[in-house]
Image (cartoon, rainbow, N blue to C red):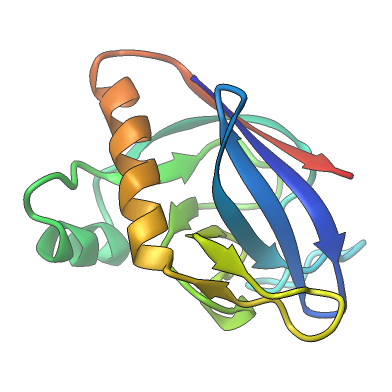
Length: 149
């Protein structure tokens, strides 16, 4: 499975993107802004291709396991990002929710006019999560590529 994150708007506080799975649009994404030098919890990861696995430890995993007991099997974890640790794909609406991670939503505001904001994040996340976690559970390799447009 191939996930592609097409970053189309990077402004003063946030970056918005279109997220595709195997060539099909899935939802919108929101991350922190671009910075030449990393600031902990306030910088998006570098463009590039990474592998995705499941992270089955940590407070976010425990929280999601309680929130989604019927299907949660681990957090979607973007691996091997140089100078970053524990980059996850999760629910959230604003730059304050990202901490370098990728947030998902069904709708996004125009990032050029004001701070990017996602809507219907839980619904978008659940649909995305079920597809990706299923692929991982059957042993499929999952990659994610971040592309700066």
